[in-house]
Image (cartoon, rainbow, N blue to C red; front, side, top):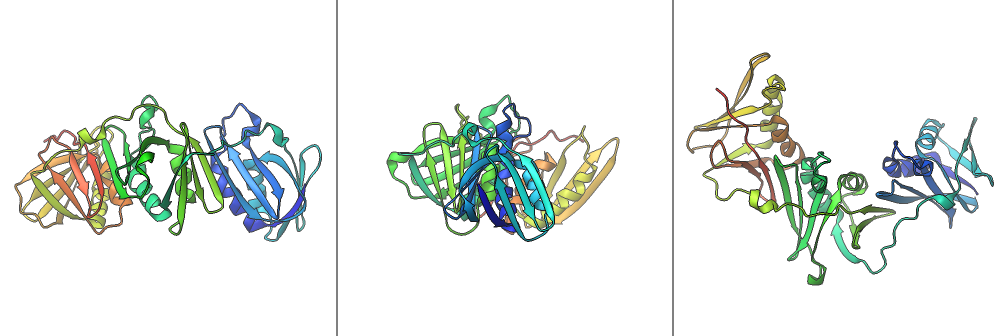
Length: 365
């Protein structure tokens, strides 16, 4: 095979697919990117057997063909080349010669026959979702996915298509983020699935703010078509816990918080929390909230924020990282913190269909 392609196009194409490649693989071909040159385009595909991604870039194809080359090595080479046309030719033994201006590289690849094909989605259920809607939902929930591999059903985003709504949920057992959005789909396509973390991360890289994503679902696999790219992934099998039962009922107090100012305050005060006492305490009084952190071996920090609050005086403590996460990923200027008492979970809400449940920590002193 032989083709020429602009350095920028090839680098951008490779960067979109390179993250899937596993560094710790027992099958050498899984470290490679599959290149297929035909019909005026160069198609790039990577997979780790759980997640696969494919995209294509415009290229001048002199001789059609296919090969696989070491992905990370290829990205590093293309990144360092001078900006101009890149000419690539591959011989019968899958050795690629790369010429760009005065630079010349030769890298050894593997034949495409052993490269695992991406699954087929013929006859699968289809859902059309605005890219902006899905991107926004993943951003508002993805940070709460569990990293504890012993509870593998929590290592992804629970995605439910029910009653004309798409619901996205993530939890690690100590906090929970949920977003609901209206979506048109036939009642016969109601289903609940768990999309693994790696697929969620790749999808966030691909999604933009314009156009739609075509989501296809088979029994054990999911695929997303985003523009020129296709992302496929295995689904997590298992039963997701009943998340609705951890959402508290009616709260006794609601505090209106300026999101940006609250984020900055928690960020500053938490500098003096420590591993032993990793919490920030919120004390609510008339039109104010005092945010403090106290570590016997480090010191203490305290800051007061003016907020419209007329409720009863109360205090509650939260893990500062869990407190900052939604504030960093929301766009709204105002958030609401609903509280029952100092031992019950707090709930962060916005004017819209988002909620974030956060477990309190024991208040000391």
